[in-house]
Image 1 (spheres, rainbow, N blue to C red):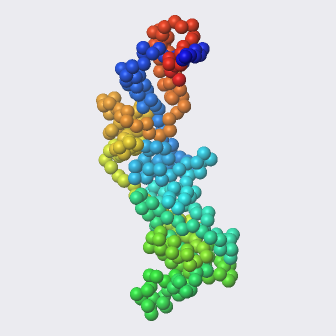
Image 2 (cartoon, rainbow, N blue to C red):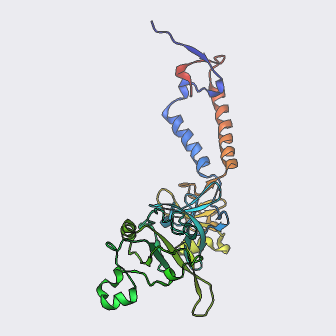
Image 3 (spheres, rainbow, N blue to C red):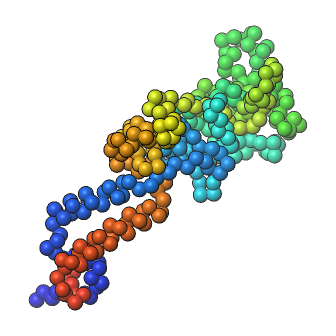
Length: 335
């Protein structure tokens, strides 16, 4: 004998069986979709004290797709660069001389002295338009002389020019004048070598105790000696310049934000009233793109959209629902 159990539930969560069909489902999806895809979206212009501008973005669909998900803004407001070797704090971004400055906490620093703790080789994603700057110098400590050519470069290169590029230079200026702590290496050895790539860096670290990087910071003055060394890694980047992005950013055309469709990666101009394929002031003359919600969606707009849809839906259901005094079978429940 089959017993059908009746459960008393709130009628607002019910939908009559005769309303559950493919036509009504399609209608509901068609009605709900414009509300959900035209929510207010914003691209954050900063993370902590670091400004975020094109080509970067810390929200989905913001900036250039070439740098999608490269930067991460933590809940504490710390901007980080994401690479295959880890996540690294970003200290500064320059857009006039396009580069990022990052710190690698695992690298040797003055406070370590002769304590050469193991470090992880830094690497970049080659699919992005990020590249290590030639203004970086790499210093390696306590390398094995059996596996690494450790020689004063000027003298060695005169005798063996064919091996000059493979030499770790003990006569390096930075090894003789350590930044911020010239007396830190009393007994440890130091040599300077510029790796050709991530694999070259990993090979060096197999035969050296530790390493650090120093970049040459420009002082922005005209004399010949206008750079000073500082610890950190400088990473250069390109700013893709397109006519559509310039139009989008133009104040006379609405001052939008350059972004992209997260599904197709096609260009979008992100405006206060929606997304345009050209610039914001043409939004009234063209259909805004409902294909993507770029940026961080505000809680108020989400709540407003769902509230409006929910009120309409409940009225529709209650108007057509049969009177059952709040009792329905399990076959009738919406949830």
